[in-house]
Image 1 (tube, helix red, strand yellow):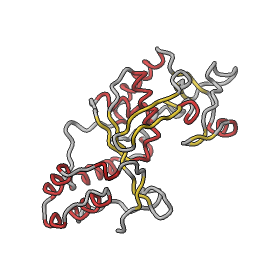
Image 2: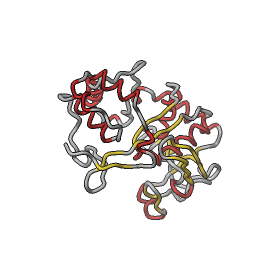
Image 3: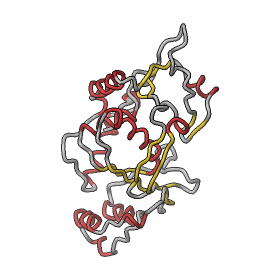
Image 4: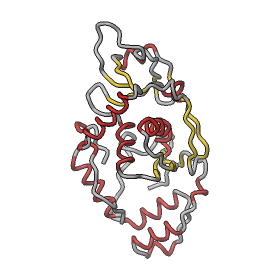
Amino acid sequence: MEDLDEPRCSQDAADDILRTLEAFGLYWDEEIIYQSRRTSAYEEALQQLQGSNAIYPCCCTRKEISDSAMHGVEGAIYPGTCRDGIPAGRQARTWRIHTEAYPKVEFEDILQGHLIQHLEKEIGDFIVKRADGLFAYQLAVVVDDACQNITHVVRGSDLISSTPRQIYLQHLLEYFTPHYMHLPIAVNAQGEKLSKQTLAPSIGIDDVINNLLTVLTFLRQQPPDELLQGSIDEVLDWAILNWKPERLVNRRQLPALPY
């Protein structure tokens, strides 16, 4: 459960996620892990990175970076101000990864094909521990995946630009790198991802079968009409047996189906 930013997360929201998964016949194999309870694991990984000189303290504020930086795929690219040490009279605020030593990351996405990202030029020295003392998402998910022996990661294509950073961290921490598949995301008429920020409604649990078939249709899997009369298990069994990811090759987004 990704609840690193505790002030912005609530137990009610986490419980609602679990209830929704259960309603759709989706269950977990082991105990649920909450990131908010794993500070010691992230701290251990940070110390390992410190021990190999892979990270460095940084005093820069967001405004300072924005005023002096180039812009990449996810906003301002850190210009490396503190790589060689913090200027006199300043205090460390964050911890950043050196990217100049491993500038290019390549990986084969099961769906999107061969991808390359030049970390230093496109992302910059990214943060692994924030100014508010919280560990960054990139570090936390890498440590969590390794802890749970994750071999395959399937997620939305909106996260594909994060994957090279995670692969780099796996390399530095001597972790196994999972196989990745990034699925197309649903977008509105303006090309924006359907989310709370774009006021998209939450998934309903009153018509589970129809919702599952809608998702399968969106993912171009062509479920047969007779499944409308089936059970949740029958729909999921059909989806597993008939899953054809090649119907989605090299697609990052798809227009959302009407509600």
